[in-house]
Length: 109
Image (cartoon, rainbow, N blue to C red; front, side, top):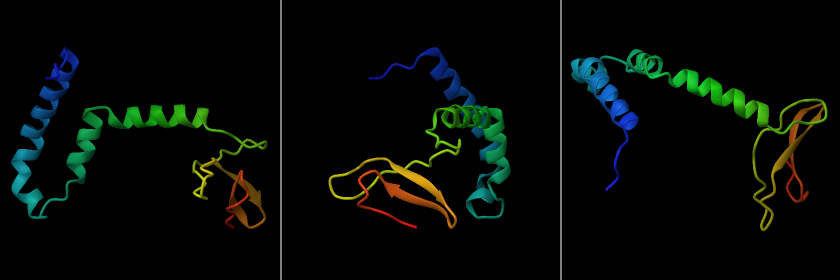
C-alpha cells in the first residue's frame, strides 16, 4: 500500500474542502447543465496555484526549446516515416512554416 506524506494529505484535505464548499452546493445545477462549471474551475485553478505552475512550466519549456538560427522556436513533433522517428524541424518559407524531417522522407508544405 502507498503511504502518503504530509504534503499529499494536506492537498487531499484542501481538495475535499474545496469540493464541499464549491461543488456540492451546486451539484444539481452542474449535473443538469443549468450552471456552467467555468467559474468553479477558475476558482479552483486560482485557489490551488495551477495557473502559476503552468506559466512557470511554459517559461521553462520555452527557454529549453530548440531554436533556429534566427531565434524562432521549432515546434515539437516526430517523423512517422517507417523506421525514422527523428525530430521534425521547420523551415521558414515565403508561404509560411513547412515541416520537414531530418531523413527527408516526409515533407509537408
